[in-house]
Length: 311
Image 1 (cartoon, rainbow, N blue to C red):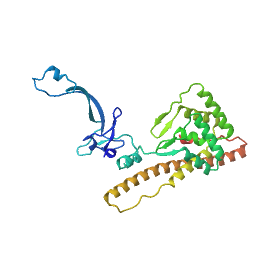
Image 2: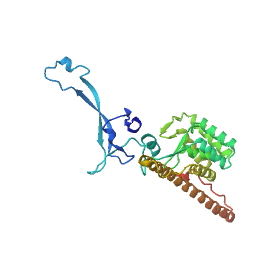
Image 3: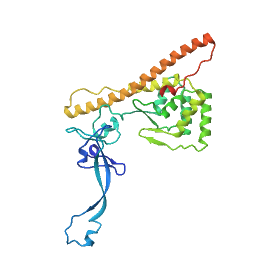
Image 4: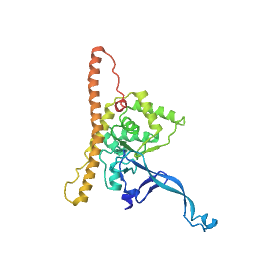
């Protein structure tokens, strides 16, 4: 009962059970009401014979707060009015409330540092190099060993993930130069306070690393893109098809919600994978063109910026 009906009432009060207010169904984005607290003085309606002492006693008169459901978007007559339980993706909605929302804009797919390690190894990056580079990034506050990198549709991968992809594929000289730059910048008391953006965390240091890589290295994007593609392909292979039919109405509803969740997460992965494969093909085409130009004009080629491909 608590798990399915409790919701985040306000940022001030946190989660709670609110009879009547919990009748509103949830919608992520496009909801019509929000909950807020307003100050209100509550008094007992006593008769005129009550003394001032009784009227002013703490249990009869006190400062209180009232929860208000405030309309924030127009609702047509006869339409259902939706509240929001917060900016929640379908994985959280299904786990906490037992349903999913189609086309949920808050859906994410998260990847961990171990996912990165495994994908890099599949792309023939030596294990000792992966270990060394990740440890050095962690030591300089680019990300943590328990980092969860969140992917969304219509958004580039987070800086921390882009940095990690570059770090495990960069040349020794290039990585050293960037590390040297970041250490110098950190010594200037650049803030290293971590800011939590739901599942994915960004740091000032991670952004410094990325800026350094762009300025000093202008690295070849191919290896980083290949590792990213391997991460996405491995995740796609982990999805099983939901069971079909049987079990009654409740089971059918659960299976339908599960399918919504799986389809949404697969769509996020497939979108990023298509973009990554497209970028790799463009690189291959550029490499062929540049080789031809070099052979005909004896000009040095310009290296692709790995990060610009995601912007």
